[in-house]
Image (cartoon, rainbow, N blue to C red; front, side, top):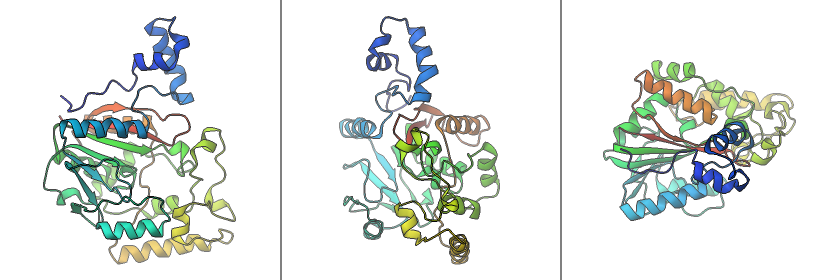
Length: 317
């Protein structure tokens, strides 16, 4: 049994409360309304499908029940805090603070201590088990999704949850880039991928869309970055030092940067996976059926209107 027991991701009572005009109808009609309209229109279907509400819910549960938590890659803005919360990152706290400053991040809340460090994101350095493993905008960066899930399973107690906040590729910078398939995930596992592919690095840096959720929801996806004369105005592009895309010099520079990092054995950061709630759910279910992982879906929320991320929970049985 899961350590936490939030209501289903479609909570009928919650949906009724947020749509009082449906209260004259029976449960079947309300459920059908949700099926037809909630996903497409981004209606909230449970209280924890938005990050700020999920944060409050989890923090209260951690404090009340003294749950042991490992948060992955908190950078300068940890989601959860407290005596029973530990952190995993690719570098120490001081370096995280420095990178946050260089990225013009507005936060100043980097954890004073990173308890487990691996420059390649290898969770084998974690020698404890936890009730909750939490990650926000992390899983899409892992080169080998199956081994990542296997590593998380190893450090979760029975009934523990892996709780994720994941970008929805339809409403973020990945809009134009190809959806991840189950074949992509299995290929990375069979080939024991340790780093991003060049194709994913280029997709993350060169063919990206803008990263503003509201325009995406309104159908304004702009143009692919690689087709513009100027890149979108966001911190990743600034960090990469990209200028005009007019003559393709940026693309050549990215290829050179990738090859140099590969030769030095450095971890190359990129969005290796691009999910929607439906595709993520399908892939997780398939990986469990194929016995690649033992983390079945516990809860899966759809993306709420105006947001570019969704919530998923996997259970260690």
